[in-house]
Amino acid sequence: MNPLFTKLNDALKKGSNRSLKEHDPYKSYNFKVEIGGVIEGGFTEITGLSSEIKLESYEEGGVNGFVHQFPKNTTYPNLVFTRGLVSNDLFFTWYKATSKGIIEQKNGTILLLNSQRIPVLSWTFKNAYPVKWEGPTFNASSDEIAIERIELVHQGITKER
Image (cartoon, rainbow, N blue to C red):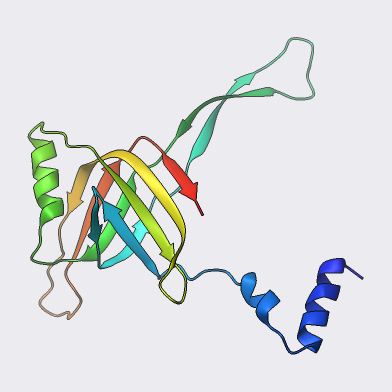
């Protein structure tokens, strides 16, 4: 029998679910965002939290069974923050300044919280600034919340526990 299954079975027999809870995945809806030292709240979604290593292919003469793949550089997609529209329009103000050539780069952190709202993981992005702002869609026959999106370009992400 697999040692992991043995450990889990022993824990269950003893009535303890501590071992199981330690390995439960975190919920993605429990997070905070800090940008430029200020906690920004009310985000309903964050996308673009990824990175990719670009590769260069090299076909070696006489070797037909495979193509060599060499790492080049790491790329990061833009981060997109979505939230309900509020009277505080710091994002729009930041975006407008950028559109006028006033680039104010800010560092930020996305904090994943556990069920007690204690940070357990964080992703820090550096030198970010807005490149796209999207305002709400208005529809008189709907009662949906007005949503805004801000898209940030940045120079990399680090992950910490």
